[in-house]
Length: 251
Ligand SMILES: [Zn+2]
Ligand SMILES: [Zn+2]
Image (cartoon, rainbow, N blue to C red; front, top):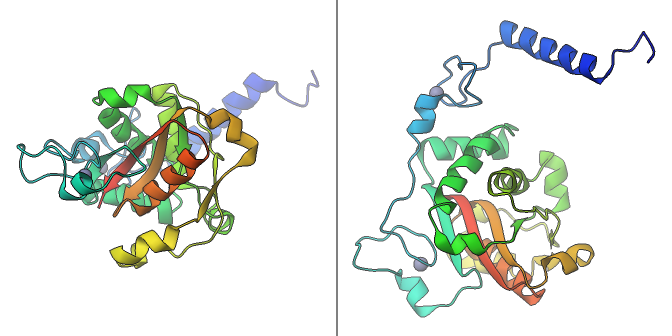
């Protein structure tokens, strides 16, 4: 080894030293309440994490939306329509701390919040027997232009966390977004389905990996479910067995 260059261990300890120095000068703060984080906390303090709200029963057993009464099992939309995404579950309502974490992830470059959101989604999935059938994880793709602008696809980061938590392979480029569709959040609900129609395609390079598989499809927020269902429709056309959706929040 060249004496002028420290080995791998040396580089790692230098990096840790550097991080410790940065933490000393700029101590990491909770991304929600801005309190100084304890050494065992990451991105968000334990108090704020414990205040995140999870969607509790009763919710529609198909689309995961909260229901007004425990006597109903399925919401009025799911009674009349069969959706390509057989099941969808959301960790939280889109408000409070979860909404803040998602905004930080999508618009403020705070990639670290994906870990907390991934933890919330894992808590929800691990309570659902149907989700034990999932074999691979596929994120809802961003169009390449938007991915370049943002620097990453937030759904892919969430997929990475789920992949580590659930020990399932992530196929991050299984779907391609063909059109740079306007953001769904700016559209009225009746236009959302049209906006994403035929916007996705199965990536030929990974097509064999998804064949006959039960897919866990990941996104950050569901509003009407149009994006998740269009992705699921594309995946089913591409030969997957079944698609189950998971999102951080249901708006
Ligand atoms: Zn906090
Ligand atoms: Zn429903």
